[in-house]
Length: 111
Length: 112
Image (cartoon, rainbow over all chains, first blue to last red; front, top):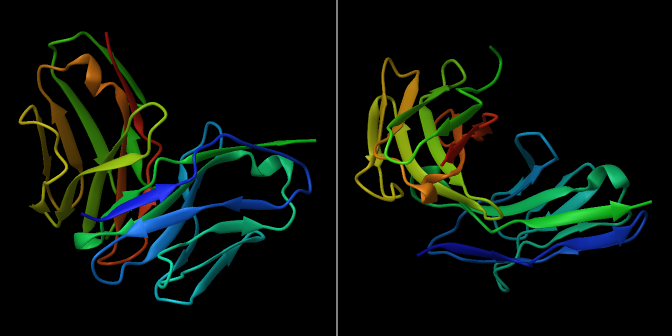
């Protein structure tokens, strides 16, 4: 079945460092891909999405490109801030548009 | 309200008791999803409603779990004879058909 694999955390970075969180997927068909973020004490929020191959989703300085040839959707940010500390989830759409999530990657950014 | 709401926000129950969790979706959203997030894990899909029908129940982990939706609005997830492994945050999301899913704040269930 469809699945998402993302790098295990926690990822610990200093402020202004470059961030990459790897995400690969297995899917039949052509799913949409998403990154969701869960800040401490808050609900799950959509960070960015891409609906077809080679699309780039971007928001709040984060980017991810839908790579069909490598079945990947890696999350990147050029300069992280303390406020980016959160848990990040990669996801794809399965049947009936349900979301299939990776296990999540916790990011901790230190001043 | 403007967003998805869930109640209660926290529920502590004893093993073997039944619990009901409620979701109020965004008005007009015909699609409604339930997910479960166990500690330190990703979200697992449980069930999908389109209107009041549930064409995809494939994520329900056992026959102790059931859900219904009425009036194309409120949904209730019921867990019978709760077990400790049912402890998790239960999240509800709603969307227009094939649209972006908006998540509620979740219900944290603790089974003692």
